[in-house]
Length: 125
Image 1: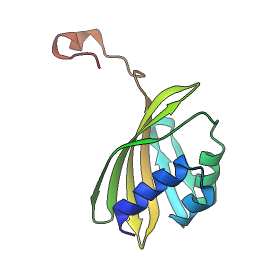
Image 2: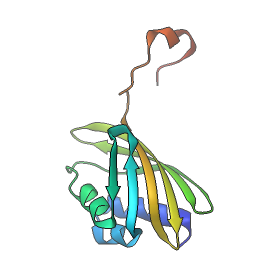
Image 3: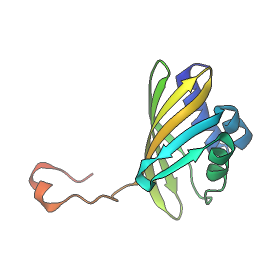
Image 4: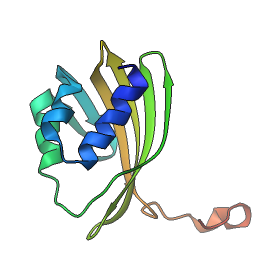
């Protein structure tokens, strides 16, 4: 599988709750950082478990995937029945068919309100 296919498979398997399949796409010593919450997840088992334990009610919609060599960027929307809509921009490194590291920026839509001083130059989404 090329790097883009690995990341697309990651999101497909997450949506399917195929946790063993997610694990197959990760290096044993994968490191994934979540800067917005100042967390680092070290190791395949920890990354799989944190996603498997996330409260149910969510789905995944891949908005886009852009790949260049071993670097893959994905933008994903994750609506949750009780927590609203999240967006994530993820930056992945894939080597030998496995994700070796990632950095994910998770946010909720509208979480960062537009300040009044920008109002003359922006439109609400």
